[in-house]
Image (cartoon, rainbow over all chains, first blue to last red; front, side):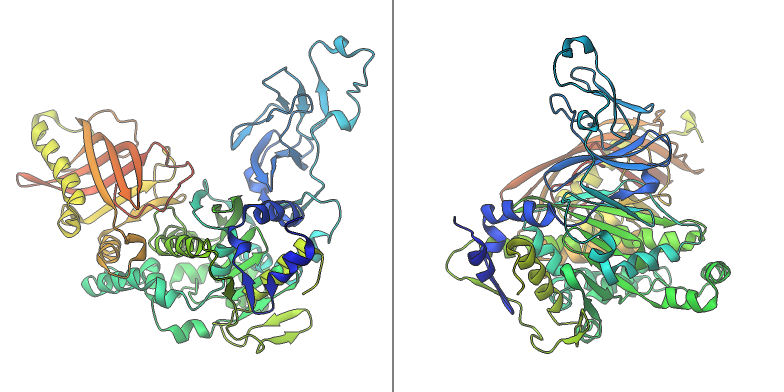
Length: 435
Length: 171
């Protein structure tokens, strides 16, 4: 076998990884099954299915799924596959059914909890093993699901850590975001869906690379500074221009960022753009939060500025600006990112305006930041196709990280501790071996 | 507000203005293109065709003149790596209608007209040609014998679809 466990394990060293991990289609296929097929992946948010009969569809690893709200209010994550001939049971990205899904092909009918209602011409099945009362003849549930404060996750594997053990300390990012909402969070509008022409790992590594902005994002930064100079009053407090400017700014700023790394490849990165305002509308928001949580917790929630919370390998939350990115590996050199924006219910409009500006500035399919990131990912992927040189170096600050229980803290923001931690998890998933 | 037919500009003058808008983009005269906008003008590409305002949910583009200047600054910058090589574009505009019942609940302010049209835009970059199609809704403020754009709404037919590449250019 070309890629036995020993061969795969040898491709991950403590401070470098082999280029084949990014460009070999066979390794990609193994990743889809062994990493995405086993990890807890984000499915959707409960606010997307507010009423019984509401559903969304998505795909986890290779498995098309439906997340549906049943008559009793429970949310089910089901294989999007008719129990009969296998057709998708729901083809739209979202919708509402009157309590039942009907397969377009032969009219089999299923409830939103997956159970079989009935089939046409049922007497044709007399004398066979057909058993409409058996769950085996309904839509199958994913192996495991977990609703964490409205965020629905699923694992396609029956074994492995349960969700809270898997997510561990990284759950703080979700807690901070939800606690910032006086009345809970909800999805705002449709998601952005964009394709990167590069391997999925290149994107995740870049999320925690605080050295690249000073090189990759200079151009929009200079553009933003020109705009501020031309219209100093009109651009006062413009979050987009501030973000573009900061990204291209003093590299020592990003060195101050703290990165915490957790088991299973997860990481936190502290923020460099604060969502906190000083105007009356923002102060009214802080007053609302204080009534909900008390002054101490409110200060804790608002001063904890987490730029990224990553649940490896599929979920990147930006708690401070209420964005959630879902990583969907399509092929070895194609990666789909779905980007969701959330609204904090009960918060004044100023909070949403900032999140909206951030979404358009940094996450839209036309944003000026990713335009150069995507080019970087493309060039890295193309460069790694060549067999002439083997290793990708991840040794910035190697050996200088701080081990604190099961948390690995970077000494400075330029550390590649997160990238090393991601590949540590990669090796565990792919080979069962600890690094 | 309905446009007053008696005071409408000539169809030809409106078309010429929209064609100029397209031509300036295709000739990469971005600064001149931006000057077609009023100082309070906005370039807006919604994520969903039924979006009636830009404040309720995400948009693909939402740019006032300062943000346009930042984007143009990037497009001109030698370190805009995503523009190595630069995009080449070709905009075609047709089906121009003044004050048509557009179905868009965007009402014009006094002194403005609403013009709808269709576009077919091709972009070529690094051996790949991409097609964009959809509709424009222009709010044009009349200034003397000319116009200033107060709103250029761009609805791609695939706005909520899967975007295969980052959109770096103005459609």
